[in-house]
Length: 535
Image (cartoon, rainbow, N blue to C red; front, side, top):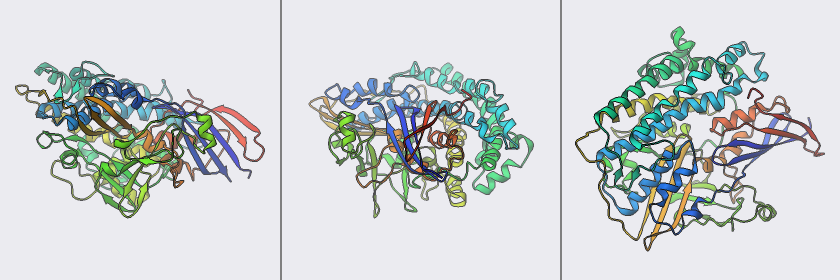
């Protein structure tokens, strides 16, 4: 078969347009390059501003996870200003962050991923007609209710934060809200409605507790066939359909994972510091690479710009990071091809490696030994990786699994609020300092590094999960996680390469795109079409 190059522009519209170029030999992707096609420059905007400007500016980076940006920005300033955090404030921050992620889970699955399961490529599957009945956009029996109900959790966010998205109610020393008993009661009712009507009735076909009892891949397979409700639930159908059409067999990625962790035990993080962060986390941080687990250390992060549209070829720690953009035309002459930097992590005895961020990375961290009594301790995805390895299916299942876990946590945090106690303690606004704040946004680790000098922001660097996953090759030419995940993908029909969409969307890369196919030897355009013609 002839070599074919596919140029996808754009493949996604999440945190900037994502373009992808792949080379296909004998029906299999052999090379891939990801390009972030839009320059944002938020780090440049923040330079020289008041230290609290990050609380206003960074939530505007994204319209779907602005709360996550606020969360890590607030903690970065808490660390820099050495604030004291009342337990109520920690609980409210946890609740808000979790609710934003809970709304994103069904939206990602039904509105971005599952509609591709209705692609004509799968018409020969005995489950295809059922997939169309459930997942067809707008008309699917599961699509509509799930997308509508996905909005409920952020109603809880708005009760505490005043609005969603783009709230700035988290501030150094706590949160700017004074919830009433009515607010808490209403929040519980909203969360219960979401849980009963989507999570349990539609997605799981069982109770949250029954699903979370699954500890191994064999447990999950047995769960599917345990009763008709679970077998015919959206989760049960998703698993059966993926195994039928082969979504468990490609999209593996780099096999190394990063989670910076999120959500704090209120009594363990009353004075936020970098050194005390890991032990206070409920959603654990950690790195899994080379077959072993390692403690996360922000000092080991570097951003490589060898193939990015910025001056130089250095790999810098974010505290010392530079954002000096250059003309892409000039950059391409130097072998640069993306506006994204290439985050890398120094793994002991392995050097600087690309790491996958996201729900699967969080689930791997949760499977690590040594969890504290307050921490997430969940062996399921450690067993799944050992049993069948990573894939498009496993990455999506990891995200959906978190709906049950985060619901339980959020429900407990609402019960722990003490309305008689403070929600904010006024901090000292130091004129010098450094801060690191991080969280797990819906699609992965999201972090800020701030340097304050003379009462102003001297340096501000944001490293997003999208950068971790779609970053280009680094100075050693190691591909980024999505670049590597695309390699090995079978393309059955170059005129309908839906497989590329599956891999990208498993990382929560949003796509509604036109693809141009070219003969790899002659450059002749073969066809022009839209991936997912159901939209």
